[in-house]
Length: 274
Ligand code: C2E
Ligand code: CA
Ligand code: CA
Ligand code: CA
Image (cartoon, rainbow, N blue to C red):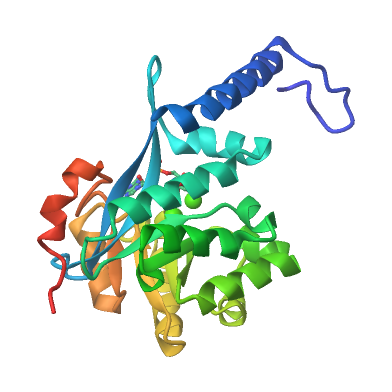
């Protein structure tokens, strides 16, 4: 890496070659996995800020590889995005969620979509068809997007976003604060929820900045009637602070890790009835 200074010749090293081969292997294997039942959806509960009531779940894809075991999405999502497999994968996840979570009661399910999915002109039609075919109510679906999507600023992405909203689907802005988006964007794109990035939550009690920023974001969001979810909550101290500033919802290992379908029941007992 030392030799890769500015202006220097880039050499295709054995390490890079191995990386290319690995990527191609993962791509081929992922293509197969989409049809062989190696993918699964895990669900991470989201709670009211007292940690008592389950208000929703975030769907997170898992790859149970026959040889390599559990592969993390952090590893294969970027490869899926580059190879164009991501949209097929995301639509598979969405359909699965709609089938599995349809009868869970008054609880919303958040699904992650890649900015790449929005390049497909008819994203909203595809989502509508999946909801229709599975009978899953649009009002219980939340779609998580990232700041890059808003930044790309492509007109077709904006059109898809509006179409999804008009169907009654909620839009959440993921990893808020990790990029460059501002509350101005949030107003313009009319997101319903912002998810404060884990890095801020983890710095509560360590840097005064993090606490001050969270406080400020929650106030502004509340003034705009936007819901705030804190993600990556791992300690009681973090939870107490988030309560004190009025953050609506919390998600993180302190309260619950992502669980497979078989682990969802005990959380469904904590969904508000009425
Ligand atoms: P994300 O959307 O920010 O999801 C939150 C990640 O944080 C998840 O990692 C979750 O397991 C992890 N997490 C939850 N609570 C805690 C905590 O208290 N502490 C820490 N340290 N981590 C926590 P996961 O499941 O490995 O997913 C990684 C990323 O992969 C996700 O980040 C998301 O960007 C992407 N991803 C996952 N599933 C999908 C999918 O179906 N489609 C797309 N396009 N992306 C997905
Ligand atoms: Ca997410
Ligand atoms: Ca996130
Ligand atoms: Ca993320």
